[in-house]
Each structure stands twice: as C-alpha cells, then as structure tokens.
Image (tube, rainbow, N blue to C red; front, side, top):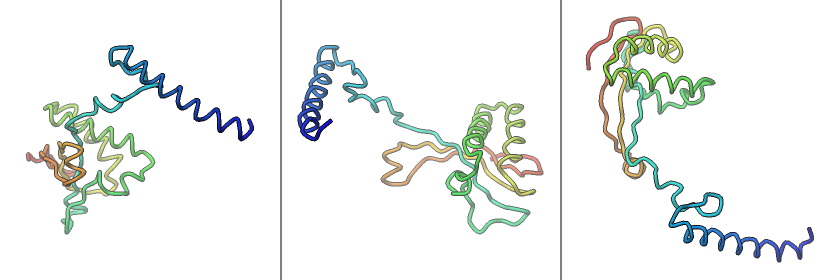
Length: 158
C-alpha cells in the first residue's frame, strides 16, 4: 500500500472500529463483544487474593540472620521448574490449610526434594491474603502460619 492509502485507510478503519464497538455495546444490552468492545475485561478480577509462601529460618542447623521469603527471592523465580515448584507449594499449603495430613505429607516430600536443595532446612509455610491495590500502595498483607517444618525432622505445630 502507498503512503496515501495508509493516511486514508488507517483513520477510516479506526473510526469504523470505534463506532462498531460502541454500537455493539449499546445494541447488545451492555454485553461486550470482545474484539470490538471490552470495558469489562478486568471487572471480574479478584478483590482479595491468596498467595502461599515459604520462609526459610535455618539452613544446616544455623539460624539465618533474617528469614528468607522463598517466593520473593529471585533465585526461586529463575528456576527452570518455577511453575511446577510454585504449583507444588500451593498444593502443599492448601492441603495443610484443609487438614489433609496424608496429602500434605506426600506433597511435603515432593516440595522438599525439588525446591529445598540443602540437607537440613527449617522453614515455615505461610498463607498471605491481600487486596492487590492496597498491597501495591502500602505493601501490607495478612499472614497466617500454616506450619513449621524441618526437612529431615518432624513437623511442629504453628
């Protein structure tokens, strides 16, 4: 296409596209026709979100000076199996939260074998609940301890 054709075609296309979007929205009783009109694209986003994380407390029997939040550490996100590890962590924490001891036991072994590379690790499993906009502006969230564990030992109650 020539430059002149683009100068005519592009504004004309945008005008027709915008009019079609407004007309479909008004003609279909407020229902969005996605490629033409999508004001409600994010209207169903969660108002409150839940995130599960692990806080490392000690490695090889030595307490850490400051606990390390595994989910917020860059090394966890750079892992080749990041999505699998995050999924196992989520399922493990969900099993703990629901009281499914047998399911939690198997997922704990899987999580420890795949994610916690050191031999002896003491860690906490936490549930964080937050409103995304509030967390973005203030950084605040609600936290619930689901359990404290030793990689090569038994589990302690929170």
